[in-house]
Length: 423
Image (cartoon, helix red, strand yellow):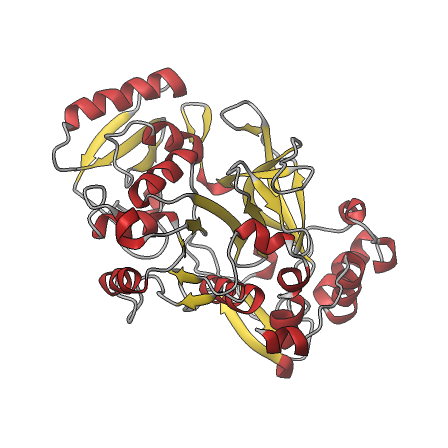
């Protein structure tokens, strides 16, 4: 790490420089800006962003070089999105400076970022995120190891060599400090280790768990904290954009990663509100650190809103609240529901399995409850139906399914008819 910090001096990256670079090097961006009659010199601050056109996933298609703004010969790493939503995957590539100068600059020069993560140099971090194809595992590995100076144990996430029982064995014997993984894999590892009967706090002694890559309601977070006996924090980023937000110790919204991205919330064509009645918009991100494949005003498809109430521990004036994917909105019987609000309500019922799934069936919402030992399925179904009528205003269908657990990849809370049967 010392070598990297000394060899690659932090550089500054401004919004204007990124936009000018994309305009000069990308025919796609230049054509888009010219069609809007805007030039790079007009873009100086985030207030100028609305002058620029959006970038959408659809226009990028599956061309691996659609975003390329540097010679191919300078690239040192490339990744593809996981494609779990069934759409064409996206490709993101990096040059050396993206990875080890601009990409590490906020961690090595701005001490507030590692302070938010509460990871110290020399501590041991288990990284149970995928290393293959997608960028997530390697990105966290590089940030924690090269940016902060911690020791990373690359557990992976159920790949060929990262068999879950082997991962648990390493965690027990090494006894590290922190764990990065997805919500579903955190639940799966805990269940595999014997929770809740086994005392995982004494068995592993983790100081914190960081969850990445999947929707996580506060109710699911509390379950994971109870399983592991450790505080759980959320890290918001995307494969396309990199880091977007990090929770502080208050566990109450994301502090924007302003050195990495510029974040906007744009109105939706169809109004959607959260459980508190607050209007949600689509999260739009502009990358400030990546020059090989920059993204300008990229429509992420994620729902969110700004909370203007400041947070003392994070030191920022406002926080970002994320409410999952736009495609996870459930429309049933004229109602617009979001999976995060449903997950919050159902997982507040202790007997409901963490692996429940939702299946919209026209005007009916089917809630599939996996079988669990020692649980009165009929009684749980009655509680779920009562909750649905009381809080959703819906008479939901409850279906009892076979026992299930983690089955690889991202856990899909919502399964639609086009995605086939629940397995």
